[in-house]
Length: 594
Image 1 (cartoon, rainbow, N blue to C red):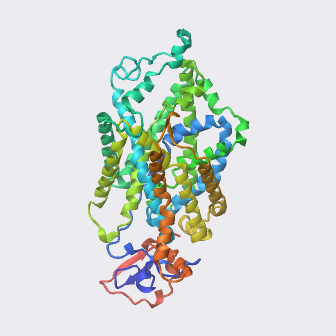
Image 2 (spheres, rainbow, N blue to C red):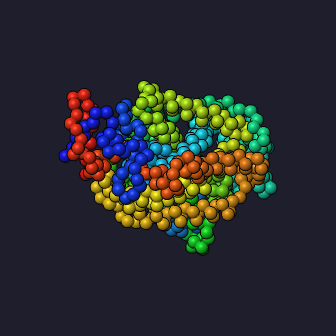
Image 3 (cartoon, rainbow, N blue to C red):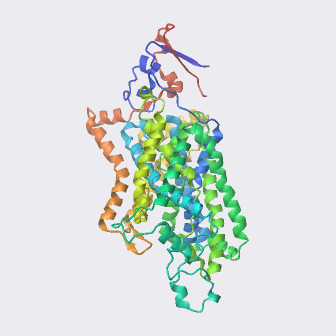
């Protein structure tokens, strides 16, 4: 039955009657902790998805991006074809699904974005700041993929595709429209020839300069495409999950329709069978190479969007008793299944391209000229995750009618200004710096490692399993606890150290080597998120008072929100001594979800 709590000050009863001030209380296996400062007067109840299917479709839309559609098939053929699935699936179960579930469950339990979710252990709130930095960088550079795609879309409305001929202003004397071996008597001409597709990309779209130190001029056409995409993102995100939940049914399903159409068309082309066999044919000798296992781990963290805070933000809009455990397995299956399915689409077309050009499939695949961009909803989720984290920092007393709209506008405008550096002639070098360093495998692995350590060893793995049981009504399989505590942190740190030991300086097209100051900028981008965790931890410890043990106890005590009181109520000892309230008193009703 509902628990009726009254108090005379309009504050949650735990704060008013039990002395649970924010940040106070002792750490331990019980449910004691502080009450979030925003839980008082003016506290707004967090909005939720209109339908639970909105959350599922949002995560499905999040699964379709370059990481699944292009990068997975590329790594699969590079690392032994079908045999790559062995390390991939193994790391899915020991790393991908446990952290995927952890982030969604943590957001649902704490009802907060990527920063305030770490009120579960406030000393490690730097994890939230780190994820905010990473997702901000992702929002900034990833939208360029959408801008390029929009640019191609506009150009495709011309009667003759500009990348299909060699008689344009940007084409060179080396441009060759047809690469048939039987039609070419001059072997040297074929070897030096360049496709009009490549020349359109490099000479027209990018108009690339000779290096990072030569930014060159702005590409006004590309800048207008960038502006249009940011405006679209703004109006899709500005009203929150109530509006994005409606858009997602198109953005999540349409890419699958396109993939199916492309697959049907691709398998009917000559050379498609050879391409597909090249994709799935196993090379068992690859299993003994460490790089194969590292690529599998990096790909999972990349495609599952772990460490960005976006999954936490999406989970925070769930109902408190939503079965996020089941959702995690369903979504992981869809994510990995999309990756594997997309491989057949990509390599059927690559097989056709190789047959047309009379070259080996590996040469076509390595060129990197094929890009499938179904990434619009990825941008929505990235911006939503960032805005959710920002707004959670401002409690209800800072309420403004258009607070969200203004925050989204500032975010989009700031990212657009930074993006202007990527629509110049040297923009590709800037884009690659962001891609290689700011949201690289190392930053995501570092983030995932600390997430597991904090939840399993600081807050307590058993304790969090109890919290999950309170939400979903049953206790998850102990495998999750074992992964959070031991297996997943070891996997994350192992791959992280491998990346660090085998670090190679950044190059463009294996030809241009970035200058030393360019690498310094790149490492600053990477460290700007990675250092948030230790710097924030040390700052909080030095600012606190008392012995080290007292500081640790105080700073690792959870700060609960008002919604937690409905299951904290049995721990409150002074309910029987509460005086009855008057008509003017605020009445707070907490109904158990069990």
